[in-house]
Length: 166
Image (cartoon, rainbow, N blue to C red):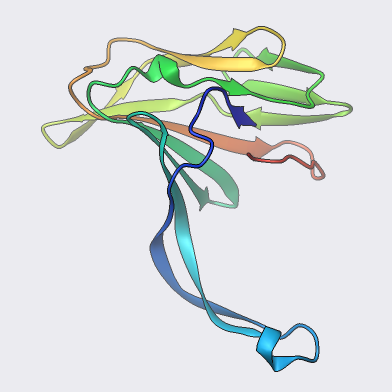
């Protein structure tokens, strides 16, 4: 997955530190060992597009990622290319299906919302296919003066698929 026209080197930060720690004792040289490595629940890429952040996290053994669109920013700036796919489809549920050989990967229909006076309001929205391997979003009736959050869940339908996230 590649973000078309995005910042090639956005600032990256960890978030939601967890209590878990890891130790890596690889090889015979103690100078190369790593101990007390912190774990985090999220990784945030700031300003992948001007006014748009991208946050990755795990949820129930699935990879999810949110595009967080700041007020005054047009979400139509978000465009993705899926290299290495044979074809892309949008199924009857609104899920984006990536066909790669005999395997498929599903990106669930986006869940889009805004907060209005502290109340989470769901919004209508869909994927839009742009040619053979590109995808953008259609969002209906959002308030450009409030942050917009688009949750995308990546669900691997078959057990073995290699995919590079860049």
